[in-house]
Length: 251
Ligand SMILES: [Zn+2]
Image: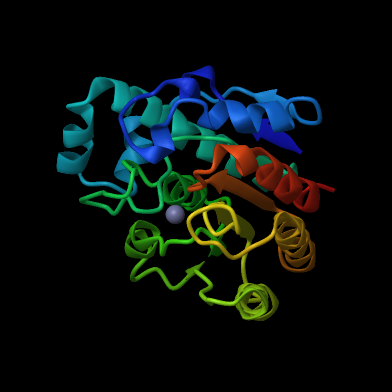
């Protein structure tokens, strides 16, 4: 299990909670002893264009630092997806996050839709045809849903639930029922933790989620699975939550 990370993700490229100083450090500290880190290259403009319109790309370019870190984040998701396709589970420890980035607009601390860019690249290269995207972030990934509207081969699943057990049950259901996919991709947001914005999940739940994803991928798509970071804002618990998720997800 490899962690995809670039030192430029430490940069405070803007003033939102996803770009906050110290956020990546809290996770790197929790992961660096146990996992091998791999540095991604940037996504190409062609990679971005599989999801985003030219005008949107140009407008992000207007903030050069955001653009430079943003294409590394998208490149990190691509590398995680490629490793997963080759049979090596991986996690993109990346920012800015991506699931609120739609083809022609973005909000919610996102600029480019990292996970959509990665999945569309694998499809464009003929490596996969179908994908299941599980998004357990507190917030609905409107950007990801928009990127794949009209693409019946890519299922986007965002479980809801205001109580812990029903939420976890809603999360498991599509892993059991959507049997037809070639890769299982996870938008991993940790803002539903009991000490984060959503106030719901326990740290151990992230281990269970990782394990369910692993089991489903082994059952349905030869173990091909990867995750990318989305939200999660309490630096005091973010590291241990990501750590437990990866322990569940790894072999
Ligand atoms: Zn969120």
